[in-house]
Structures are given as structure tokens and as C-alpha cells.
Length: 250
Image (cartoon, rainbow, N blue to C red; front, side, top):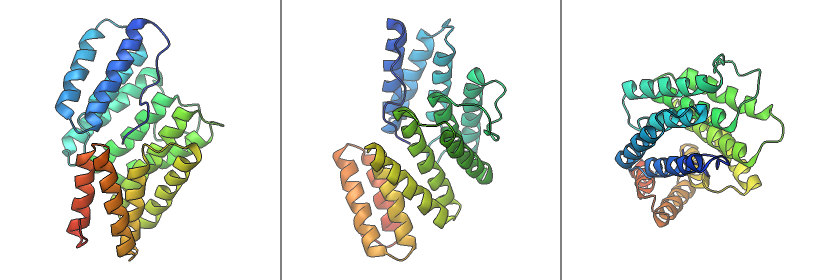
């Protein structure tokens, strides 16, 4: 998933603000599919943070390490390793939390975001039912927290998108379309458009499977062209590949 301001700006010391800047740079590299650069930046962050007592710093490093290995097409072993890293990250701030039972307590933005990543990691590890249950539980937990901050809204959009992608992969097409639709509504209501191309691509795939192939193909081509303009060429290529494999003009 992509994310607007993945990490909150730290209002603490100059060192922690520098760490936030480095963490964002590492995520931006990973999100742009330059994983090797992302891993080098993570290693540099981890070295600079040695001896740092901040739980949040250690949590962010674990999260970034997980994101650098859980990618589309990653192995089951890599997905399982990412899951362990994400669970360790959660335990730093919520040591007694059962991620499969989020009925009680509040989640921070960072904790909710990590759980959303864990949903994807479980999917790539082949634990689809666990991933779907986790995604539903997270969305309900966010909904119970009252009026969300802008950062939490972004996490919710990402969680809805991740859940829809997992459901689509499992063949639960109606549920996938419903969650993609919810994510689109959240994007529009919050004027948060960073994730919108991925949401619209998901909705277009649902329309394709429903038989609206001409309209869906046009939407997918438009999204791919937009992503190319944003230098997100790998994502654009993946969309065109999906369309071409199904007989649509890529």
C-alpha cells in the first residue's frame, strides 16, 4: 500500500525528527519498488538508532524491515518472516494485545497501520481466512474509536484496500467490490487521493469480472496512464499486464 505521510512528524528532538525523515525516505524507496535502496536506508537508520531507547523508533524500524520483504510475488517464507516482524513491532507498544481479538482498547495510528500490513503479510503467507478476519477486525476497531484523525482515516482507507485485495484474491468478488467502494467513498469524503488510483483499479477489476469489460478496460488504462505520469511505472505495468492477460488492450 501507498500512504500519505506514512509516519507522523515527530515533535521531539532534532535527532528524532531526522529519524522520521529517514524513515519516510526508506518507505518512499520501497513504495517506488526500489527495494534495495529502501533496505540500505533501513540499515542506516538501524545503525544510527543503536542504543536508542525510544520504543516507537524500534517499532518503526521493524515495520520498515517487514515492508521491505512482503511484496507481491514474495515467497511464503518471506511473508512469514514479515508477519513475525510486524507482530514483534506491535508487541513493543501493546505486549498483551491479541491481534485476532481487537474488541477492546484503542489503537494508535502506528499500531493500526502495522496491523493493516499484517493482513497483507498473512495473505502472502497463504493464511487467507486469518487475513480476512484480521482486516474486518481492524476496520471495526477503527470505527469504534470515534472521530478519527486524518492519519487514522488514511490507515482506514489502506485497511479497506488491503482487505479488498485479499478478498479479490480469494474469489470473494462481491465483498471485494464492496470494500473497494467503501475505500473510494472514504477517499472522496476526506479529499485523500493518494490511494485513489489503486482503489479505482480494484473497482475496475470488479466491473470486468461482472461483465462490464469495455468500461473496466477504459478505467484501467486511465489509471495506468495516470500512474505513469506520477512515475509509478511498476504499478502501471502491473495494471496493463493484468488487462492484457485477460484479452483487453493493455
